[in-house]
Length: 96
Image (cartoon, rainbow, N blue to C red; front, side):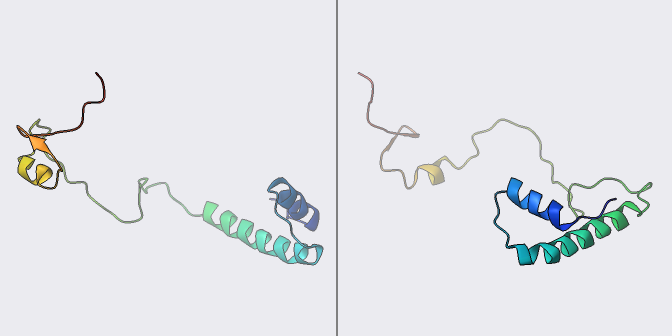
């Protein structure tokens, strides 16, 4: 992989519309080269027998039966409703 030089950093900054002072371009080029070196090191890791993961934490999803029901919490849902009637929210009529 090619090294990132001062001109490349200036070009990236211009494309990203980020103003970077000229005296900081060399420092940023060094940091970006360090990051690219770390990425190259990650490519050297053998991942042949490692399954892809969606998260770094091994989390298991809890499954439930896919059943249609009313949830059994109608009273709790309607408890704070300003108006309710026959088990439903009551709202003002908006269409005549």
